[in-house]
Length: 397
Image 1 (cartoon, rainbow, N blue to C red):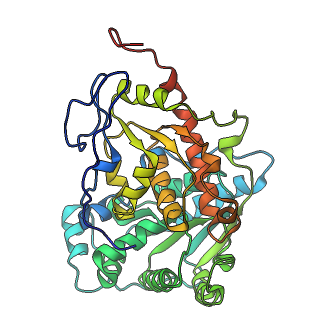
Image 2 (cartoon, rainbow, N blue to C red):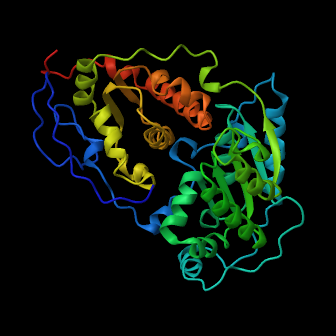
Image 3 (cartoon, rainbow, N blue to C red):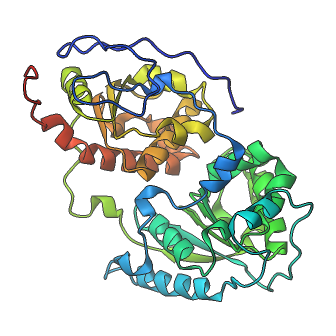
C-alpha cells in the first residue's frame, strides 16, 4: 500500500451521558474527564524519514526487557537455551569498529556517500528465533538489542513492516548506507507478504551482512518455511533459500504466555459502557470500528504508531468482522502498534476472536491474524478496569 494524503477528520462523536463534545479537531494528545476524547479517525500524521530511523529501538513495552527478566518455562528447555545462545551472540558483536558515536556520527551515517566497507565474518551472521505466539521472542530480541555492546545509534530494532516502510521512505540505496554503519539490526515478526518484499529484504540483508552488520529476527516459521500457503510459493522459496543462509535458526517451544493461567478475554461491553469509559478516561480515544477501518485505508501503516501518540486507552464501538484481507492486514499493524505501546482496548460489538473469518485463519496470513487476536485479547484484559471505573465527583452515573 502506498503512502496516502491525510484524510479529513471525521465528525465529532456525542456522549449520550456527558453530552456532545466541546469541539476541537481531534488531534490533541488525549482528553481529561468530562471533555471530548480524541478520535483516531481524525489523525493522519506526517512522519519524517529521520524519525523513522531514530525510532528504530525496542518499543515501550520492551524498554526494560533483559535476559535476566525473561522467565523460561521449566517444561521447555529450548527457552533457557535460547537465552544462553543470544547472550553469547551479543558478546560476540564487536562494538569497536565504525565511524564513532553521537550526533556527528549520525550525520556522517545519514549523508555518507557509500556504505562502510567491512570484512564480514564467515558463516551465519545472524540468529533467527522461531516459535509460536507469546513464547517471548520479542522479549528476547529486545534483550539482545540491550545486551549488545554498542551505542543505541549503532543498533536498530523494528518490525518487518517498519523495515520495508523505511526503504519506502529513504529509498533502497540510502537505507543500505544508513544501516550499514550499524552493528546490529533486529527484525521482529519477519513475515514476507509478497514476492516484491521478499526480493527487497533479501537483497538488503545480503548487502548489510557484506558490510559486517549482525542480524537477528523473530518469526513464527523457520526461514525455509516462510511463504508456505501463500500465493507464488515457488518464488518465495527460491528467494528465501538464499536469505536463510544468513541465519542460525533457533527454535523456541512453548505456549502463549499471555494465556498461561489467565482468565478468558472479557466479553465485549455495550456501546454505552464504552462511551462512558472514553469520557471518563484521560487520554482516551473513541471511534466507531467500521469508520476506523476505513480511515486505516487512507493512512500509510508507517504512520500508525504516530497516530497513537499520546493515546492512553482506545475505546471502540460496534466491532465487526473485518470484510477483506487488505483491511485485516492493516488492522494487524495497528494491533501491533497498540500492543507495543501497552494501550488498553475497550470495545463493544464482536469479541476479538471473531474479527477474522475461518477462511482467513486457514490462509497464508493466519499467523499474523492469530498474533493480532492474541495481542488484542491481552489489551482487552488490560482495559477491564476502565469499564468499572467509578464516575468522577459530580459526573452523571
